[in-house]
Image 1 (cartoon, rainbow, N blue to C red):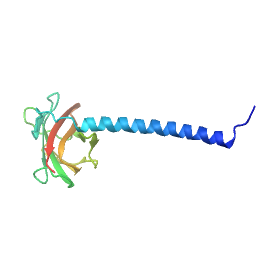
Image 2: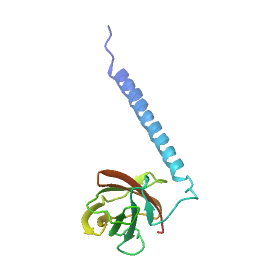
Image 3: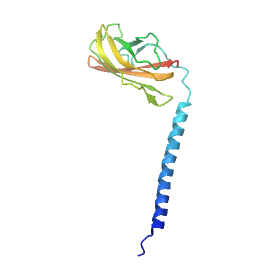
Image 4: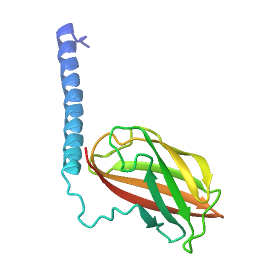
Length: 160
């Protein structure tokens, strides 16, 4: 059997590389197209921008306020989260996890905010809040208290 010469090895390597590169370029183009379609999607017109909302299953009434008054862009700040029962009693000793994302851009917060202190009377301090750009943001809070878990979502339209 004839051994391939260096020229045929080079040709095979070029074909393999161009095929691999072509595949990677195609994957990249598809991903970018999907991302651009998501970014160009419309913000729903019926969004509720309230700062006080009942959780999905009605277990908690939750509100937030930023330490700066209005929610700033590109500024590290804190939130105070207030949680109470539907009849207005403060929820004490809750476990709270949170996450935020920008649905039109497919990315989340540049920080990892978390509840750092139970302030009492149903108030909780959230440290590490930062939104890197204006636009539509969604903040999700999962609250566990008294053996029950529920989630609440806040929509925000931030100005740059």
